[in-house]
Every structure is written in C-alpha cells, then in structure tokens.
Image 1 (cartoon, rainbow, N blue to C red):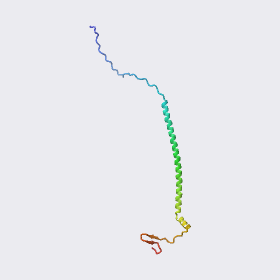
Image 2: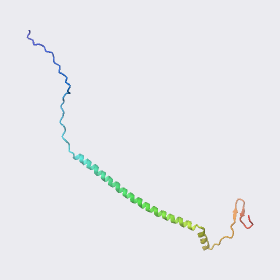
Image 3: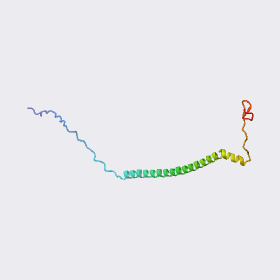
Image 4: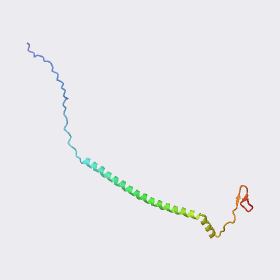
Length: 127
C-alpha cells in the first residue's frame, strides 16, 4: 500500500422532493387607518352635499314649474273669455242690435253682382 490516500468518489447531493427554502422578509408594519378613514369620510360628506344641492335645485325648479303652470292657466282662461266675447259679438243677433244702435235699417231686398257676366242677380226682374 502506498502512502497516498485513497481517492474517494465525489458525492453528488441528493435531490429532495421538498422545495428549496428561501429567506422571507418580515411583514411590513401595519399602516395607520386614519388616511383611509379620512378618504371615506370625505367621499361620504361630498355625496351628502351633492344630494342636498340636487334636491334644493329640484325644489327651486318645481316652484318655477308651478308658477309657470299657474300663469299658463290664467292666460288660457283669458283666451277663452276673449274667444267667447268675439263669438258673441259676431252672432247675428248681436250684429243686428249694433246695426240698429248705429241707425242702420234692414235691407228690403238683396242683390248680387256677377262679375264674370256683368249682370245683377236677384233683382226685381226675376233673374
């Protein structure tokens, strides 16, 4: 035997079925909830103010519509009264009364002129 040590075969590491372990950082410390709560409170307050403004504007518009409707109804009543006055003034009985008040007398006969033929129709000669 010689003085040289015996050569040993290099041992390969065995592969395991377990995954390799890695170093994991510790979790970050918990953040404060104050900014999140302030954001939620701001959104809620903004929503409430917006709803209040919208409701107020709707009430103002409702009053304007109500006033416009009342004005329209008054104008329709006035128009109806004026139309009735015009129809009453244009009735035959009213026209006759006004004519008599002005001193006019009823016509004894009514004649018509035919422009196309140049003749008088409805005269005393029986045409």
